[in-house]
Length: 273
Image (tube, rainbow, N blue to C red; front, side, top):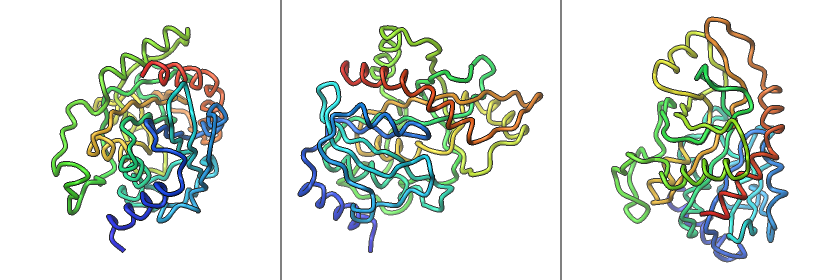
C-alpha cells in the first residue's frame, strides 16, 4: 500500500473517531511520558489501534495518542515516538505528524532528551531549539511529492518559529526556570552513542546538543506549513578530551527529574501561544 493511502486512511479514521481536530500537537520524548497526566484527556488511542501507525519499541515510550485540553487549547499528545534506529524510515518516523497536520493541527511542540556538546551547557538544562543539523542521511520528503501536502522544495530558513522561541524563553523567565538556553540540535542515526572523536566533530560542525530523534518530524511539520517549537532536556555534557561513559539509565533519570519544570514551561507556553 502506498504511503499516501496509508496516511489518508489514518486521517479518515481520526476524523470519525477523535473528539476534535487539534490546534496543537505535543510530542513527548525520552523520560517525559508522565507529562500526559497534565492534560485534561478526552480520549486515548493506543498506537496499535490507529491504522498504519508504527509501533514504538523503546521501553520509555508508552505509545499512545491523547486528545485533550491544555491551557485552553485543543491538543493532541504523542506519548512516545519512533526512531530511525528502530529500523523505520524517516517517512515512517514522521507518519504521526503528517496525519495530525492533515487533521488540522497548525503548531508542533517537540520535546526530547539530548546530550550536551556545548561546554557552557549543564546537565539538567532545557535547550530551546533555534536550528538543527540533519545527520541521519535520509530526508522524510525524499520521493514523489504530494502537492496537496506541501511544496516540493520547502523553505527551512526558519525551521523553528522565532515568535515561539521568544515565547518559550519569556515563559521560562516568568516561571523562574533557570538554565534555559537556546542552541543548535543535531540528529544522528544511533543507536550507538557518540565516540569522543564524533563528539568533537559534531561540536565543530556547529551543534550544541545531539540526539537521535525529532528532525524528521520537524521537516514534515514545516513541509505541511506548521509552526514548530523544539525543547531538548540536556541530560549530560561530555568533554571529548575527558570523556565519560554515557548510560541510557542516566539520560532517562535526568529527563524524568526535569519533567516538573518542563511541564510548567509547556503549560505556560501553550497559554501564551
